[in-house]
Amino acid sequence: MVTTDQQYDDAVQMCRDLFLKKMHDYGCAWRILRVSSLTDQIFIKAQRIRTLQQKATQRVDEGQFSEFIGILNYCVMALIQIDKGIADQPDMSEDEVLSLYNAQIDLAKSLMQNKNHDYGEAWRDMRVSSLTDLILQKLLRVKQIENNDGQTLVSEGLVGNYQDMINYAVFAIIHLENS
Image 1 (tube, rainbow, N blue to C red):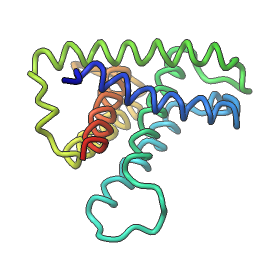
Image 2 (cartoon, rainbow, N blue to C red):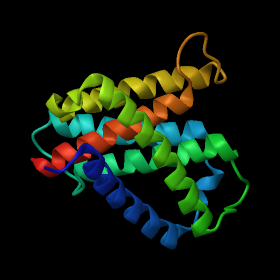
Image 3 (tube, rainbow, N blue to C red):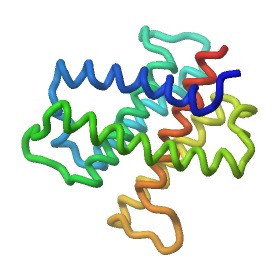
Image 4 (cartoon, rainbow, N blue to C red):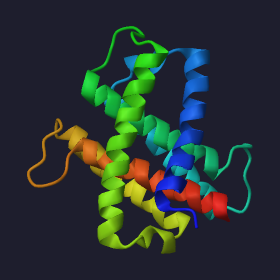
């Protein structure tokens, strides 16, 4: 039986492969984006997924699967921006970005493993639509934290929310691959 860790790694590898191809085409132009701009990009993708889930027809030939990949990759970009700050110009090599990408994924996967242990792989019984709603809820939380200049009183901050969104996106990708 394929383990959650293996399925996770396989899903992330697809996301990483696309990320690297886009890095080849565009460089790291995303380094100029503020974290709030990345949040809005993720919101657009999550909202589109929800719309696709609710409507019978689709006019653009990109479905939920590619949007969840985009959510994961934008979350990694946001985490890198939180860690490194924004740049005025693209300022990183592909190797440096890949190293940072992998480090952020490792942190998110570790969080997933800990939560998965405590929750008993409950995600396996969840619907993709519920994962979409959880991502949207996390985005609304992130926007509120951003509006509060990153300050929270008792809640997890931006990093934890982005890591959770990465993990929800991975779970959705796994579900979509298996359906």
